[in-house]
Each structure stands twice: as structure tokens, then as C-alpha cells.
Picture 1: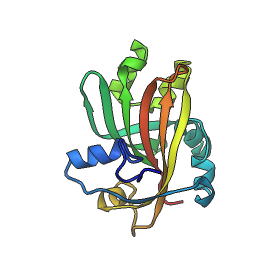
Picture 2 (picture 1 turned 90 degrees about the horizontal axis):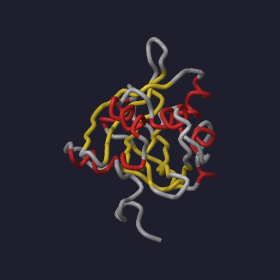
Picture 3 (picture 1 turned 120 degrees about the vertical axis):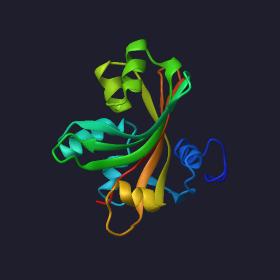
Picture 4 (picture 1 turned 180 degrees about the horizontal axis):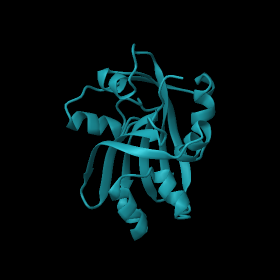
Length: 184
């Protein structure tokens, strides 16, 4: 089996690429099996659906994007985000990064992705765009200062997440995603 920290694109891609581009160090992580996820992380992460729906159900709130960084080369759209509830005040429910292959989306969905207010799962579901999720692995992460700050954590503690891909029904990749949940 390839080393998940060094194989391309790697379990942390696109987050690892975006962190390098902004001068941030690599994250300290370990690939784990789904049965190693404690609750409530297991319920939130160990499924083959989109995270937007799962988070909306868990937090009983619509989810919106708080975009930290983004870039668009016309072919691929990258963004590092905090997903948060639409409550007042909002609650951070996920930190992550996504690479979206725009050519595999209909025009209306491309436009919504670039506006950057809705999570991709919400755009796909609202637009009734068929897709399938393919889990790439589960992660135990030691957060660095940027993630501690993003989740407003008082002290660092291990976090859990997943690496996922979203594909068209014909198998073309729509997105590669790294999703990290806040402390429970």
C-alpha cells in the first residue's frame, strides 16, 4: 500500500497543496479505519453521501461557506473553507478544502461554485445533479495553529476527518475533498 502522506495526490490533497501555497506546514495526520472513529465522528463521517446533508441534519440548520482562500484557473476551482451553520451567531461545523473540476458540472452549477456561498453538496442536491461519493480514507489529525484558530479551540486536541471524492455517474471526478470536523 502506498504511503498516504507521500502518494499522489495523497489523502490530504487538495488541502496539502493549498497549505503549501500559503506557506503553512504539512499537517500531522494518520490514516485510520472507520471503526477507529469515535462517536459522533463515525456517524458524521463514515458514509458514502455528501457532508452537506449530513451536517444540516446533525445541526438542524442550513450550511453556508465561509471561504478562507480560493483560486480558479478556469478548469479547476480550489477553495479552503469553514462550513458554518446559518444560525446567529454561526457555528463552525467543518474545516476543509476542495478541488472542483468545473468541466464536469453544468453551467448553472459552475456559476454557483464560483460565487462560493453554498457547499458543493448543496449545489448538486438542489440542482438534482446525479453523483456518487467515493471515500478515499479517514483521518486522525493533530491540528496546527491555523485549524485551532478556525475552530476557536481553547486547546489543541486530535480531530477526525475524511478524504472523499465526488464523481459523475459515468465515473468522472467532480471534486476531491478533505473534510475535518471540529471537537465534539
